[in-house]
Amino acid sequence: MNTDTHSSLLRRHPETVSGPLAVLLFAFAYWGVDSAAAMIPYTLVMAVAVFTAMTSVSTVARSLSWIVLVTVWIVDFFSYFDHSMREVDAGWVVPVAETLIWVWLAMPPAVFLLVCWKSPRPRFDTYLAEAILLVLIGIQMGSYTPGYINGSPDAGEVPVAGILVYLGAAAYFGVAAWLVPTRRIFYGVTALAGIAIASSSMVLFSGGWMQNYVLFPIIALGIPMVGLLLQIAWWGSRKARATAAA
Figure 1 (cartoon, rainbow, N blue to C red):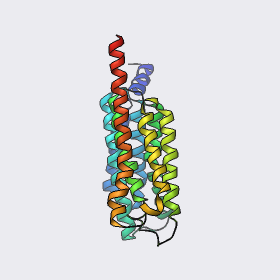
Figure 2: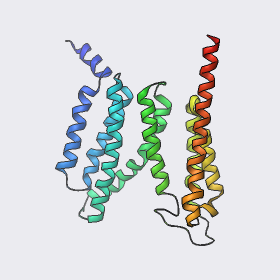
Figure 3: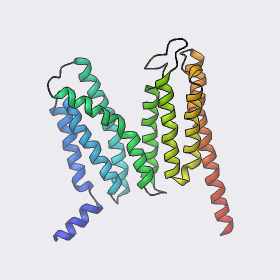
Figure 4: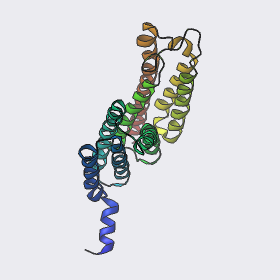
């Protein structure tokens, strides 16, 4: 087998190298590093997983790469949280970990836009990646919502951070809707949900039981679900027209 054949194989099946590399990096991070510095090999595993998912011709390899990505993302969080709670790290480990936590936070939204931009449709692994990344983004949005993890603002205080987060989410899903024509209804309606939450922030983020567990979920989850149903209905009608024309 000549050099050109080897290169072609690696381009088409990078998992032949990236798979073992990811396993070694994960094992090193999990068993070989007892500090927040484990975030370095974990971050490398996530980068390898994204590269494999975006370049391999194998549906199985691409799908497994997305599963690896979300698994390591979760493990990476608990690794950081565990070591920050124990406060056992010192020296260069702390600034590196504090930098990589921002990489960890940025990974789901950044990779989601990459999938919207580059991943072909219809393809199973693309749908899997969208679902996984949307769940991670939803978890992140929830963690930044006043009244939950961050606590409620004081009475009469404008929840500026919450407003900016959801206005940013509206702009973000607007970009996603522009990148993926076949998702424009779903992502467009999701963007409208962000605007609705931001404009109702004084009520939704007040910290009451009704606001936290009834009104906010209805808007944050209900409106996007309506968008998803409308998108499915649009797909169905389009397919029916295509079948009738044939």
